[in-house]
Length: 386
Ligand SMILES: *Cc1c(COP(=O)(O)O)cnc(C)c1O
Image (cartoon, rainbow, N blue to C red; front, top):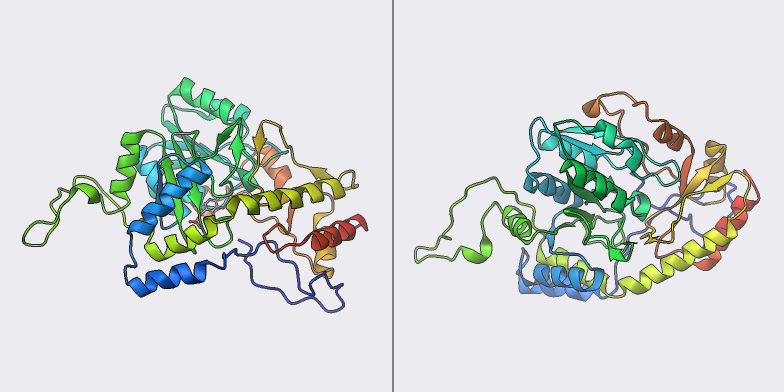
């Protein structure tokens, strides 16, 4: 994955406004985090406590997540979702290759098999029309990854899932704050998994959240994120041990309070940051319309992307990347289709849209430190050709 390490400007490069190389991502840390995290350190209450609870309350109140359980990573959220959904050895999960390996890796971790479906060339999201013929008696779930933050066709996916009695799991690592047909991501499917990793919109350093719609399943998530012990209902007895009976496998997946303190600080002003992000996207959209060699992704009126990435299809991609680099601007595919990994079958599947997408998709900088002037510079550079 592209990281945020500042790159030196290449010799002879044009210098962007600000005098620095423009990275694809930056890590956002709200200034108030210094004090909030310091207070946790001062208190010496570092592990899961009231700040994790407060973080969850705000995720639900401010971002519309249903029953969010704060975890130590997005990967833990995916793994726990599969576990709580009862997916295991011999089962199959249908997902698209256009994602980070964590999506399919967690399927393998529970003993199930990832079955890859094609994407839509104009979004990078799973194509609902390519799902149904891949369903077998072993299929248990559809995993929908909102590529770059743009919501998948959830209505079509849900209709297929209902017809075949499948669970829907959203990998929403790129899409906190996204909205689909008026509903926030995190309130739609059986399970929704978020990541609070350093270069995601809302970071806790590392962290994640799992939303389970069914309250019973949500209780199971909370229990199994902490070894399988129901913390709230396992009182300490006189000899100093909690009273509980472990009856299934749990994990050490909870978030801790100093990470939650960072998350709480970063929730302050989240909507303002998203508004600013949308304005930068609008600036790109206007500046880059009708540029020869660029084909924009789909943007439907019934959904609002979280805009983690600003991407499109480009002709002559390598030359495009080199031209931008020579002008001090990052450009990256972020991820290629993951289906060729040895663990997932070691060959590129015959998925025609995914293969075309691998050849042409590209992303340019979009993050909190980016200024309008820098976006103008990027637009001007691109319009000069490559
Ligand atoms: C970042 C990411 C993950 C993993 O999240 P972590 O918090 O790093 O474990 C999963 N899926 C996608 C699509 C991601 O981008």
